[in-house]
Length: 444
Image (cartoon, rainbow, N blue to C red; front, side, top):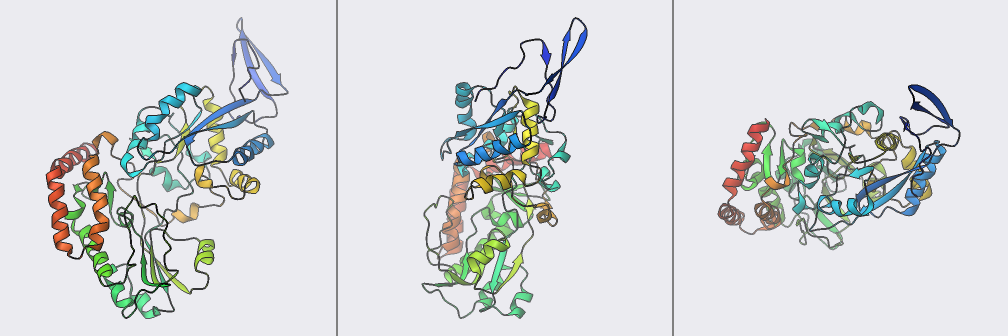
């Protein structure tokens, strides 16, 4: 629905709340001010551009129905840019803006591995207005705001549906004793002794492990950017396969695999989209996240599990976040909408009531209060830092990330490591590291 222009006179329309039973408009003519009351406020349509997540018509209608119930003078219309493995949302956006005109609410875009940095670039390009009053986004944990800063400023609202938890170990007490669990401190090398004598069957795994290349980084004081590891203390960039803490971690994974303690069909490639039936029972399950109680009950209700989680370092999370478009003609209304969406659970509840199978990940809103989940989260010293796309060497990033799976499963770890590093040297990793270190030196 197109918005309706209610008055064709010289007016300044300030809809600060955006949702009123009646509005007062100041009409200034000949140095006089006339208060005009609109008993039936005009209806505006805010155009919301986001990455395609298959948001259903029912979900959109649930949002609009809730806005009507709140007495709002606007509704939402969604425009979805198709998710592409080769072309970023940012690169597709100009075509959509030209076709449909200025948008009011924007996504920062979702990224595949090869488009790392595109969301950060998109925000830095001036597409969003700066957000200043965080207190009105009451559903957003305070620490999360640190993860969406760009050059120290906030332009988008954090996603509330991602599980920001550290690497988590689930010990099945049918196989692992309490004494062994109490002695565990997160050291992977201890897992071999804990599952000694156990072996893989069609229905059972000694250790169910599924941590991709950058997954383990979030639980340690170093972060992955553009394939490199950035130390959060020294602010230096390193080749992951020459960075001792990370090499030792991969070596432990390799030992577990070669000792037959991980799944024989293990695939840690970031481009593995094929669903495989993993044996359902395990002695130890190593997950990149901590499951909530409902998931635990649904997936592992018949197991008595003891849980051990590593810390979580909150890194930059501007990917797939939402903000007010700089080109919007209705910035106050767009801001009002975002504040409503990210204050409490009202809109999430409305969507799930109308469309029980709706994915709230699409909107970044949560049906429950998640502020308590962030009490123990550690805000990384690099939380407001991201490499821009132009600074990332795609070839080297690709070599690093795709080499991880083979290295974890190599028969001769040292030989495989040497070959990977030789390939990286030939591709120019030293110059790449120097370039990133110069960026870090300028910033920190």
